[in-house]
Image 1 (tube, rainbow, N blue to C red):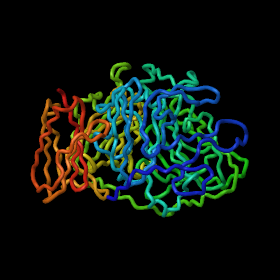
Image 2: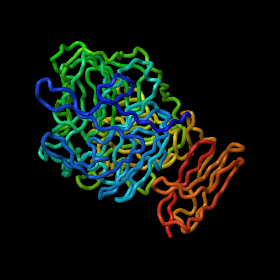
Image 3: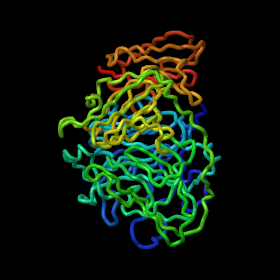
Image 4: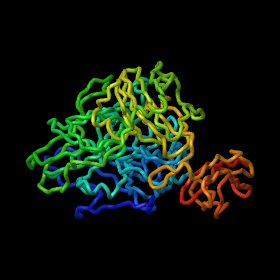
Length: 569
């Protein structure tokens, strides 16, 4: 796989259209004097760190809101990378609670996944580094600290991670200022202007449902548009609210992409459900509307417990001009190789249940999350059917780390809605519904998570550890499990010295073994040379170094694997 340096594109206000141009802050004058101009967060720049802390920002005009942010930005900075880049960023935790960065939807090594077990303590830092080899698409990142995920996300800690690929240019899609990321969240008006997070037992049961929608952190948001085709990247960043996305006049739009990037065709719809953690890219044409008119993106009414399903106006579009995006609705997109249910090697069942309030209310297979327990052992590169059986009257958006899966059926019906087709990492399981998905883990081995993305449910225990058994790595966008195998060091934790073992499966391979600290600094290079096929063991004596966590990185013919080393003097 060709790996370029990490590139982040900045955009200039008023610049000519170019692919992947980001919008500037602010906007044009208000058409009717009502509402607030849609905001856009800054883009992370090359070499810039991500610093987690509390900060005060202006959400509602004329007052400030205390948020949990990265780099004092709400929403958090947008990250843009090209497919094939190596991404690396230093995360600094300057807040009073532990935190992580989980790269939602991205396929990354276990130790880069930002799970609760790998939390960064206050005052510490950690370098996240991984190759971006997956399909272009709309992804995001957020905190995933144990029992703190819901609080951190609600108070502002989430942002876009957009993967781009020049191959998409062939489809003639809207780009630049006509390609708009929209982060949709809800907040409680009773605490305005603060994002107070104080869930009751009922909130933990249903999820923390607010009554004020924010788009890109903007209340009563409006966005001025031209009479032309736009691409909108919709991300449900709410803790628990499900949205039924539609336009106020029920005009049709095209569903272009799901969680894992472009579908195999753009499909016209009038409304679509979007649950927490899910993303959808849609195309909408404002050409039928006259200059001076407005239309609103809404969440329409639907049946749900509590205030779930309440109608909300999300974002008003004011039509102000006749400029053209030059974009089209593509007739043909690249085909997707859909799995065949007849090829599965086994079926796993995950029963979603609900206990008594305040006592492990939300469970999977009767279990609540235990950081030190492995709940499922998953074979590498084997197609499996996973059945999510919802025995409750709640919505459960089920998210799986470390894989892109395909939805197969709902209650046995394989005639799926367009938003279920394509590559997914999160699937909405409706009340008393069974959803079947097909999954094959063929990118990385290690421990990953399966959980409900209703964040109150997750923090309440609706999460399992899954372990992908076989080692793997990535080259030319495919796993290469035959190249080499890296074992966990022994002993671990260790005092003074530990042994790092690996097996080379091909003759005359170029091997580099290095030790890094938690900040990504090189500590010691243990080996750099050519080795033959077979088992190899290298001893690392750490007696001259401080106690703490280190990482062993083995590179074999350009392929990277990492293990975590815990040194206790």
